[in-house]
Image (cartoon, rainbow, N blue to C red; front, side):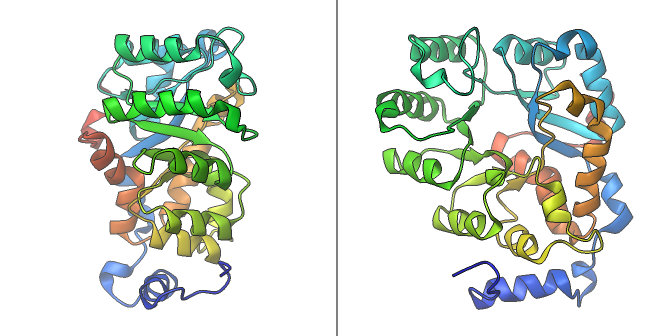
Length: 296
């Protein structure tokens, strides 16, 4: 059933009605009070081209300026993540990106020794995820590597952070139904109907909404209806993000965070708090507060 057909269940229809037509004080949009919430940036990169223009001190200053108490960080190469984590260990949740040397988003699964590289970095540093990695085109010949990666993640009880369409996510779950996945960008270009269906199909699938803030925001006065349904139905499994994949994203970091607060402002406080930081608190076992601003 397409996402345009609201009311998949009485529960989802009722929840959507609460968001679109608030009837109780607790259902009212959080509005300007959204600025008092700490944020967890669930999709940050600190890639080598940023190291000179944005030294580690300036990254934390940008986070402070925008009320970002903590961030999930992966980098190309991983040394960027480790530099940032060593500088501000209470503010950074590190995850391991496979990309390094000649290994990039389009060929990383074909690089000899990739499993050994990942295992070594996971043994040396406290990464809490593997990714963000891309699956541009699903190739079942990669199954042995992905089975090893899933094994590494399960042995450490950490996440795979997957940039892909819906089918590769389904494929990963077919390899192991208990693997823990964060779906990067909530599928990015995946239509909202398919996002809803995949999240409904896999009740433990998480997603970050980086690069989808304008899709979600709709007119600005209220969330786009198809995204309002997703946000309400899966409010316990969504997190915001910035995706600082190029320096231009760092240049615009304040605007990106402001755009996230803008759409969160249209949600009831309880829902906004979950997506802003409380889901991350639960998932990563952290306490996230505004008291962390200005600290390392």
